[in-house]
Image (cartoon, rainbow, N blue to C red; front, side):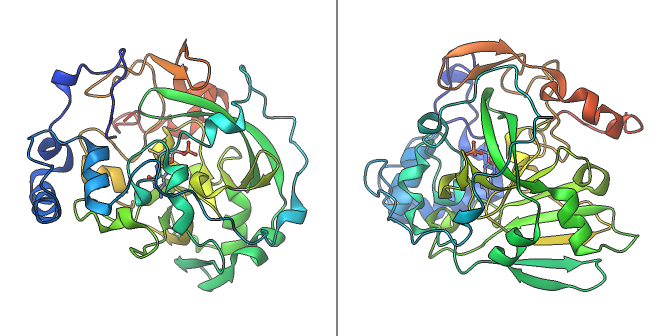
Length: 339
Ligand code: MTE
């Protein structure tokens, strides 16, 4: 993950990876050519990602407040009943904090992306069920949400960048979507894909990223009860910066697995190549399970900053969800499960 401003416990400025190493040389050179054509400001070998995006897309943290949206067609479904099985060891992060500190690279690399997501249009929105399924089909998001049993769950959320939150997501188990999709018995993975629309998402014009954002889970992970499709947060439909209208939450994995604004689920027997893995496979893998004992190549994962409180707390293996998920990995000892 690109760390824009390393905090004191992360990497010193001098150790930050130059863009060329981070992105992979060929992609970087392509991107650098595009940047050189659009700006004179990027002359340094280690460009700051935010100013890079700012120059490329005219983005500026204070420039574009989100436009008000029409009322969400599923608003009547919220708040959904909380499922008491999912408890926290910390306070829920207040909405004004979690909704103003997000990662959504389609709109730029700022944590203040809530200012830039106004161009995301979440209706009409369709979701395609594709690949190894009985009947491939496309369903409107409102029909899908209404077909699913909504509930609220309090989940911890741990980013690979060593920060965390606690979020009251509303949604439905991914296992319900798997049931709905009727995959063939040979399907061993589900690949999830974000929209691709450069007119809506200026970040997708950046040629050095492998758009669209793709993530994947094994079928065993996808049907684990913790894997959750999110349609709402804080008792309301999802705000755009959280990945409206449909995103994943897999709380035992680093946050980058929780793909936002999904338009396609493809059931397959091939392990999907994911967005961050194809950018930098030495730092971000397919499994990405949280483990405090396995550092990121450029910083420690032993502790995390609880966003909003400034507190640092020890990170727990599988983000504290080991009892629920450790069994998924017992026969996968040779895999790089924690990056
Ligand atoms: N999904 C898409 N499509 N684009 C992204 O940039 N960022 C990921 C993940 N899902 C991302 C994404 C990362 S790095 C994290 S930590 C989480 O979303 C952040 O989720 P949040 O903004 O709700 O905290």
